[in-house]
Length: 347
Ligand code: DOR
Ligand code: ZN
Image (cartoon, rainbow, N blue to C red; front, side, top):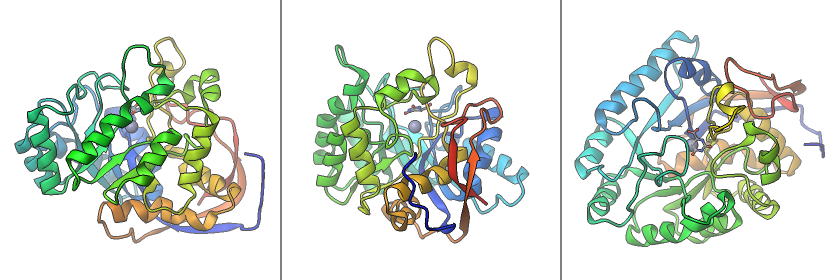
């Protein structure tokens, strides 16, 4: 983060849509939600909560109420709306899709078995007759399909897992040509190219950390360890290029994923990078260094909404050019880039 082309002192942006965010439950929910609600109009609330996962209409109502209870206690947060999701497992039925959609779930999330945090009951079989009916129902009701695009298979390194999943992704897209599908947190050049080449019902979400990190960075700092793993330099560059390209096929999905400090700085590290507290500052800096601050708002606040067929958010946020140091900890969580200096500050 050193190349500086500093011309603008203030930037005003439409509130963000963060199309992939982990809010967790209980204490962590209270700690992390206010960060996102401060600058987002909406955010996709990921369903991989534990002990209670979000699997059906009842769970959606339960989790949304919990989120609302936290929002109600924070001043000026009433304008933030969580967008609810359910996990799609092998036993998710068409009726569960219809019911969850009816109570407001906008998307179903697929974790292939064993690829990341809380995916121990993830999808095993992508092409069984049962799950095909479930996908067909998602297509029919207009529920968006969010895919964690990695495959855990023997003799595959972590950095090879996204590429290993792409043939399954392609097959799914071909089987369900009208299913709106997001390849989430795209982390490889091959993934980016695939999304770019497919039709307009296919999009890719991009985090703020994959355009910055390579495998080298996550080897040295457990707080940078996440899934998909940061990858090669070529992959990082391809993600940055897609993010700043102005293509509506790529939009923000931060995958901000808080874990307690003791779950990160230990053996058996939990995967996830907590970017929520620094997201607007970091994105401003990334786009400024890339020389395209003018493309930032489309990435954070327009392309995602258009894909989800939502109206643009009404409120605005301001950032000013003022160096600050990212704290070493927020509550019980170490943020991404702890101790580093950032150039933009959210007002
Ligand atoms: O690094 C990750 N952390 N990737 C995911 O897909 C899940 C997330 C989490 O829930 O912690
Ligand atoms: Zn995630």
